[in-house]
Image (cartoon, rainbow, N blue to C red; front, top):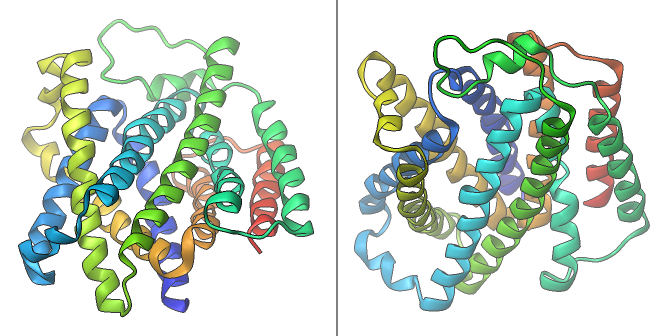
Length: 319
């Protein structure tokens, strides 16, 4: 259990910082293409690790039920959830999208009751009320400033005039962040079910399983996202991944998707889906602080209060 808590907390820190790095890249690369790029790099990272943790012999552990469970998990998490989250972040800013999407442990708890036999407690009910209040506060926050919205344009072309995000777009972005939280919860629950099917014993067994599961999940994500990106955006979208910027993009993909996935899957395996989701919920709070410190995003009392309520509520839900 202590190792699981440590691994899940590390994943939260990695994802909080990498989300801000993705935002910094958003004016130069398309977020859908970067989602495909990062899972491809992450898959390669785990395939390079595979020979050191059992090699091809591990592949025999992937039975059809496990592959189906993990495949659906990754489609929900990486393909749908992450894409929606990145889009939402480009519209309402990291300081809004992170706390709103950070309610996903509440959804995880609701799914874990019937599927993973989690208990319903008074603190969980109280925590749910706090999270709903936090969502209300954050969703009523004023739209992102025009300069922030313009910074988040994807592959902007010359002549684009900075403009404020419309109320309709803002509410769609808020809804996107909430729905991303829900599909992340489904993904985490299915990931835990897939891990339970194999029942690793030792820490080394868990590392082996994590490498195998991550290689499979990221391969599925890459095989789905790359053609979809090509179809929607065209071949020109890949032009951003060349030249002097390519090493930084690869490093960001390795950091966020390779190392981040490694720690998160280990956290789910050793601490359980509920606790891993709880600890990962620290990433929105970290993201808010980092956005304020490093991206100079404007913070209001409403955002701070909503973030504090969300973190407190999630903690109570998963006690």
